[in-house]
Image: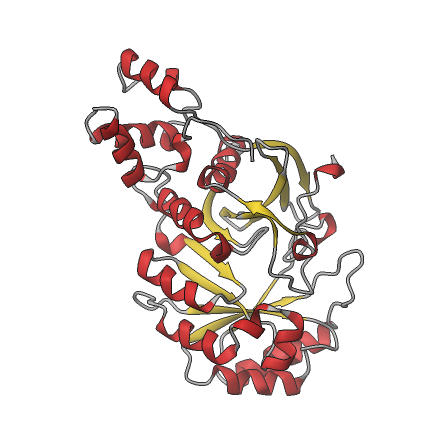
Length: 347
């Protein structure tokens, strides 16, 4: 990462920004003005922060920078899903995905350049980890996309489900969440922010202590042996430990933990697997997202048959589990779940 002596204002949630402003001898409420300028008025330079005095803006320009990732390429799928390639300051690349809904967009945000979790069904995991994203690089994906959106449906949901394992970049991700959900910044409801994890059990509990967002756990197997083969993290945090953390995760109101289950043809999609899953979930308040595996070049796995998917979903429904089959949007441009690579060489 290119080093700089000057801090980036976009890396700071409100408490940090207040402390930074106080260190300049200014009133703490100026931090709220700065956040509003950056995230609600779209300021990209100090000159545009017109609620601040000229003298203060000039001082800020000497003491800090304003920087975000840059959009360099957008691809649109047949179903109107958009995959967006961002270039970072150090020349690395990450991808975000804009997923269309009936009345809004959902943005799928990356949290790392690559990923070190090594899940066998995920293209991102094949790269290994290059580095963590800073808060400004996580939030900057959303602000850049909001600025590029034409008149029409707005971005209403944020899912931290792109490249990387969010809980492996814990501090920066929590700062980003605080910027996403601050009334002085982007103002998203915590109900509209979802973090997806492959199962770092201790960090799930810590997340519940620090912020309040929806959590989705990538499950993908109903027993330890198969899950450890598909997802190496299971060797460190097996299903018993993972489920204990999920049961203790604080979900306000009627919200529930979501388990994501990628159905892989001939691997985890049989009725026997469905029966094991029902036994595993017993006593856990949850819902399930079923996702048919999205093939990518070089993958050892295959997509399940439509018949296997329908039978698996029906079995869960018959045993009183809400199991929603999630459409794999954007697969024709490698924008679907598990297909992101952030390859700048594809420009």
